[in-house]
Image (tube, rainbow, N blue to C red; front, side):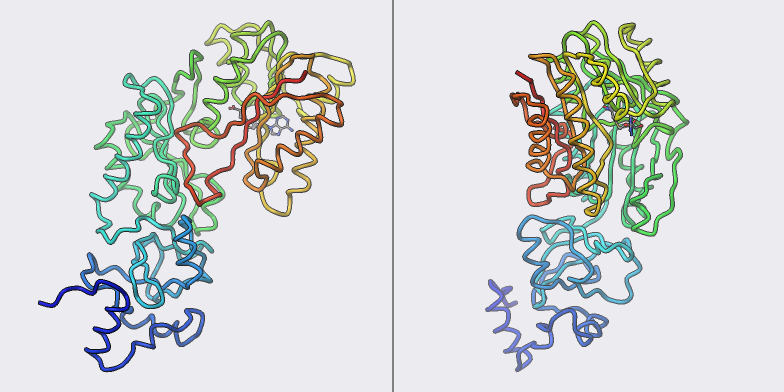
Length: 443
Ligand code: SAH
């Protein structure tokens, strides 16, 4: 038996020895039609010696290989050559233009993001692989947010950032709410439900696949029970506050868990009269209520305010008043009336949903922050957030500075925060980093 090649160069030498010529056919650009035809045939073999599986091979352009090397996990369709036989949702083997192994990935047939990396190792992607990935993700949460009695809510799997692209798993007390956002995870949702059941023995598993991003993957809107019966509203603790999420009817998977630590932290700075704009179910408001005389919590949705009132009653927080209003109008009216607040929270929905709307989004952020600076008493705290991925940290901070400067206030930055620790980001994948939360004090 001959030894496997130790380097690409040596492999080419061996190949030349075997075939008597260079395998030049394998080094063409994947964009040429010749290359596209080529991938109908068995994929390049130079690097596949000792392969662990017979998955179809997707050939990556040089640019795509570089992108993976820079830490990214998404490859666009224009940077690959895939066999025409792929139907979408399969695990594929990635190879560079010379046939060298570059990783294994989920393949999507509809989205512009054709490839999402699962592993950089040449290892089998089977049930054991997914058990390991899920266990690693869950293990990290057990460390950063231990909850042996299961009374809290935690994001257990955060998609790409846990190298489980297109899979979200949130635990609310003893129930799970999951999203399978891409073809490959959607096709395996029964497998994931079974593995999660084995690992966590939840009382119920809900799927919240009623999200628009699934349209890019050609997937329909769907929600319902995957395991167990509808658990109804579930109570869980956030810090000392009791919150309620209805996994089938709440926003996202039930609540906005990425802000959990920021809400608890905001409670530290709360005092006097407080205003929580864009309150949804009152999760910030109830943290503020523990330290303040009075909180006004504002949301444009009647349903959100109703849920907030119910949650306030559950916490015996009778110092919170929920109002159904447009926060822009309310902020303007309050500042024109010369009102003063000691603590303000601004946690709006993503104003910039795409690149085209960045300018309008920045005007929106500036407007609400400007009004807040007008309303804050000296020494007052502003907790101001943006969950628009398209507005980066520096741009958001600059916008807040412009608002402070228009309001002629000097502002201290006490904390620059992001999403909670159970929503990690992946180094090299800016798309996993979207939430910004500044804790400020006006002087
Ligand atoms: N702060 C909440 C999450 C807010 S999500 C929490 O920590 O859980 C954004 C909320 O803003 C949604 O509930 C939405 O109904 C509300 N909203 C959207 N536009 C609004 C507007 N113009 N005025 C007030 N609320 C608005």
